[in-house]
Length: 418
Image 1 (cartoon, rainbow, N blue to C red):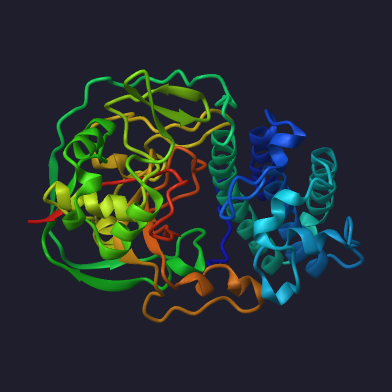
Image 2 (cartoon, one colour):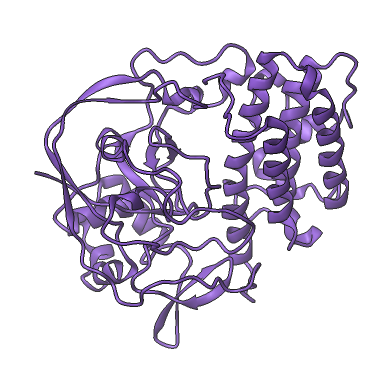
């Protein structure tokens, strides 16, 4: 990862802002809401709040502040995620059994860690300040995970509870036609350019040759997905990869996740409750398998991550609908027919596997486990979503999930050869 901290604001102020948002996101939840774990891929809100604090306590306070004593030595076992270098840990699929410590105790833990870190920050060496920046970026990732997992938990409740009031956003109810944006291809450079923060998997920057191609000016809408469903898209094995077809049949998949038919009309469940589907909004919560099948049905394909990044090189990474403050995360189009929509709304599946770039080397030490060991069997998504904190993504940012997963805010942008 790059060691240069983002300089648009003081690191202490940035620390307070990022840590405060996590607390705000959890504010509407009861202790019970924050404890439940809807499925093994998700984690309770309490665990996210504690794990992000454990990260700062372990890699900054313990390792770089002489005389620091841990808040509770037993909690390292509970809140380590996957860092083998930090020893044994509680099983991931059993995190929902942690009724203790309570939500209140973990909020107190956050306050104690914040107080200690902010007090030590002016004296921290550059190496430790770089770890603070990594910890903030890590927490922003967990803020999106909190929203994903919170939604998954609420979706298990037959009452379909809303965490927040319905969003009041400007959105068209009439889908706009899709346009194609030609891209010249040729020899391009992708990967982090060395300015500001980046995760290790975004490096090193390297050259890729692209044939001419075109990208859709926007992501696929709910209206277009309804056409795919009505056209038998989920029932045609010729549209699906073999693994995808096996997944569809084994799980009886027939709609995007969180879609429900109520009174003969399709609704979607989100953090603002169960509401009728907006035909013009981006389709959300679809897997790579579904995205790939839709692209075949539409006579197109998914872009490679190099194609996506080359097209996004001049786009504003702070554009589009992203998470600014605590509130309902639900994708909608702020603008149409502009490639500036490459950032925000929904993560966009690519046709690229999550693999190391040429010359990739993980960081030294336990933090080197951050990304490199997950470069197997997963696919790359690009662009950020309505649940991604604004300022967190950039053109080189690589998100990754397994091809069957879809509880994240994931959608589809089409590509074609030109």
